[in-house]
Length: 319
Image (cartoon, rainbow, N blue to C red; front, side, top):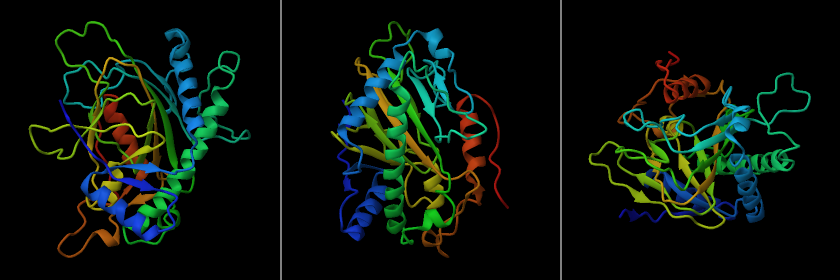
């Protein structure tokens, strides 16, 4: 049995912004995870998202494969990903669906894939509403994170991070029963840290999420993260860890099968691809010089995605 991790709770609507920012700083240095409440996304919308998500994942596989993942949008089937390259697992026991930045009707290139309105008439409007509301909550949270880092509230806006951010909504389905899996251990999502800036995670309440606070220590100690009704679970990604010179921690986490169907929605709020990520002035000093060279956000994320899907490549820094 894993221990239960008691995460801090951050209230996005609190008028005491300095106190809230201090709580975020403590949470991000101690855990890299926290709960976010009063964020503006209604409980009814969460329920609708998971209802529509279940409808999509219940479609026949050949129907879902018509929307197979291209350009980080669309469907990925069971075992298509292995988030832990050191694992001997045949792949993660989850299927997922990616939705990228919402496109204007006049956009010349439309990358998002949408299920047929004849099959799922409410699917697209539900996901677009959810995307916009979570993006708004994420931007408001980033302003507080800037204050937590002793920066101006509008820092991430001024450096161009929020100018058409590379924000991805990923719907996930973890089947309850997988049948025989031979001798190897099966993971819903194998051990990994998120690649980007921050992730806002919602679920249907089924447990399974675990974190390992000391990712470089062996053996790893895993702690359960419990569901909190109406709250997002927020975690810091590798890019934010890099931006803060490792002040904020990007924590290793995984999802373990529980025998129950789990639905979740992860919103990855990442910067505009041309935003240069370099050590923040408030996070380095003579005694703690920058640990990483500057890098374009787009280059960093592209290489991380390539590694997840089995390609090789090295990160290209900006010298």
